Image (cartoon, rainbow over all chains, first blue to last red; front, side, top):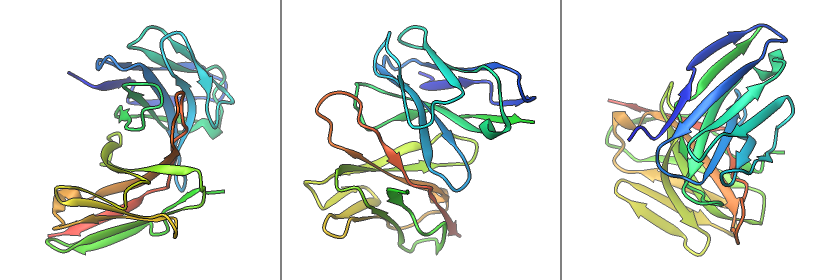
Length: 113
Length: 115
């Protein structure tokens, strides 16, 4: 039981490049989330998926897109990376929609030059 | 506008002593509170939670206290151990009646337990 896994662990991009951050969970959870963590700020929600087939914007969705590929996988895409997107990205999941206790992945550290 | 505030960025405590981490909130709609612990290069892990109908919740060495009138909660760790050295995030959300309820996180407090 791996919990929540994320790939890659580290990534460096140039401004304007695109990439997809992958997230998968093996806990049969219904809801999944993408957060970013920046110095001096708490975790901020980018997008979430309450259940398979649905996605919704969070607090800071601009510049990102998501895909809930199936119940296990929830990917985050940066179409045209900007230096302001330099951050640590965490994927999380909860058993049910609205569940507060979130299980987090190990994070992806992204640098945009 | 920070709705969940952790005003102490860091805290150092001797092993065996009590660690007290504090958190204040401003949104009166919050009525469920959580603490997460985060080690470097790992994701946050859930530690303990409390509903607004309680003023205390205990789990082993960890106790969370809630003072609703003061909009304040605190996490007590007794006795503190070196393995407790981590960043602790306070988080809060409104009660949910179905549907996603946004969890708001504080910026974290870095605890160092000195052997």
